[in-house]
Image (cartoon, rainbow, N blue to C red; front, side):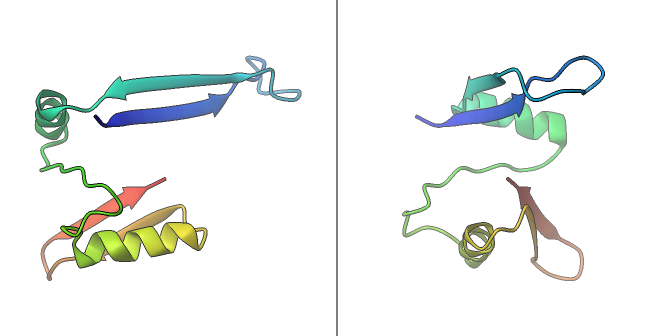
Length: 87
């Protein structure tokens, strides 16, 4: 089972002061949800475990970039297509 997780600090409405907590959103990512998100984004989506032997070169390079502190990653497939991800 996969999840989509997002968290953000909670500030005053004017963004002042220290964070007062954290809001966390989670959503199951099953085949139906991936199709819905893919249709919404007009993009093909896939989920792979980071230890999967099926990982493409793009996934491997993105994983390495995130481990080194990158906040986003773009991998060109060819002269007309790219893949991108962000953490």
